[in-house]
Length: 408
Image (cartoon, rainbow, N blue to C red):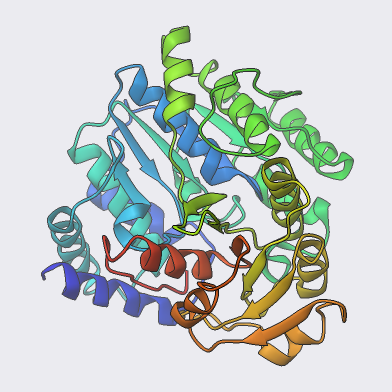
């Protein structure tokens, strides 16, 4: 299969939906004989900040001379982004070759593995073949039954836990924390961001069962030159540094400084200056805590200046809370429809939640919504969904990558 054919086959696996469990992925990894047991793995769970924390660690490790594999999800523009090798997305030839092998491997299985199981196996296959020094691996969903939990890490990292994906992970902070705590292993250090009391109680209880402890990273990174914007990113950076200090690597101070200054993580307060002197900002915030962090960062950067907000959200999100928070900084809303298989909140459902003093309108495509703001004398904020962020990035990046919308 070429790249297009292999991605088409992989995407067809999304039709089976999300099936949490470790049986298939363990079988896959065993048959592939991956990952290399000598390769240290940093495993990252949590609700918000997982991707940024992973990106910080990957950048610092590369600055210190290590070859790195980075596995994150979802992608924003191209599937290739999910598997990064030495700071670059895996190329089409590598992905096509790997997926062709995996398709042949599972062709006679009674139950073909899911999209995410195959993607996880592909990542570890490439990391092993390329002889990476270390892998930084982000949990896809939850932790306990996530495909990435099939490995033994060198350190476990847990970012702030809050409400998200309640229809799968549970309706309370405690229930969700139990799923995140599932990545903890006996004898493996656990580094955590400060947590809600209910979440911390769950983490501490699980640590006690495993006869280990959780190190909570209080405060923020004090380095001034950090590439990602917002106070929450200073906290993510501090968590990344603490995690690496518990890994079997020698990393000098200059590598930490360089790595934090050079970290790139798309779709998180991603600023695109426009000719008229205004910015388009793309942010993937799609839950309560993410929206709060976004609003705080907006005020840090732009003060009381309010943007035009281009908005869309998945149907299963806490829409009232999300809109209420974003409305604090919105001049007006343009609701739109990103190109994604995911079920989205309806335009009427969104419109009725926007405060009456804020005008709202609708544009049927992200391209048209962005074009509609061209005559505006205001900054533009594109927010509400990673799927929306991805499509907007593909438009503003002027076609550098082909947009490959995904449901997972």
